[in-house]
Amino acid sequence: MIARRLILLLVFATAAGCGSPSPAQQAATGASDTSYVEGPASRDGIGKFYMGREISQVMGHRGAGWLERPGREAEEKPEQVIDAMDLAPDAVVADIGAGTGYFAFRIAQRVPEGRVLGVDIQPEMLQMMSERALIAGVTNVEPVRGRVDDPNLPANTVDAALLVDAYHEFSHPREMQAGLLEALKPGGRVFLVEYRGEDPSVPIKPLHKMTEAQARLEWEAAGFTWQETLDFLPQQHVMVFTKGG
Image (tube, rainbow, N blue to C red; front, side):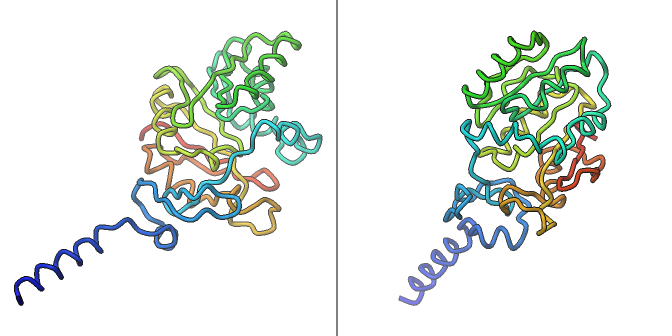
């Protein structure tokens, strides 16, 4: 009887120790593993946690007006962001989560001999980009239909990737990072633009912001090397990562 009780205690203890950490535990510890954890969804989240961060809900194509709002140029200074990318005229640039092409069409002017791959998972956004390119006569912006777990880009073809206020919405960040790492050429760069999560005065919902520490945790775990963080924007970080060491 005593032996049987010992066996049962051992089984229960093992089962308790093997369970996945709760989202609260993962967030508290800043969990360094790259597994996903499911939990209760907050108001603006999807109930899926990655390395201690709850992934936010996606802004759908009905929010296209927000992407093209008149005040965005003053708030996000797109030309200065593109200046910081220091692109060669023949560069291939991937705008991940391109939406209506707000940045893609501006980048296209800087790479007249190159291409801009406007990646989005929403066909409505891609249609808007295609129509805009046709009307403006722009031939070097190419809409690309991505998936939630794959940017759908050829290997070793991209010089630089730009992600503006999009990464925090990726439901499969680990897989998207892996696809992007494969798509970048050796030495290729990622420019990650996110509202500053450290700053409570930034009037954006918490799940739609990221701290520099959290971003570095996730991107370095994916095999990227942090290069620098630029803070010339009023409310956002511009975090630069490179492929490999």
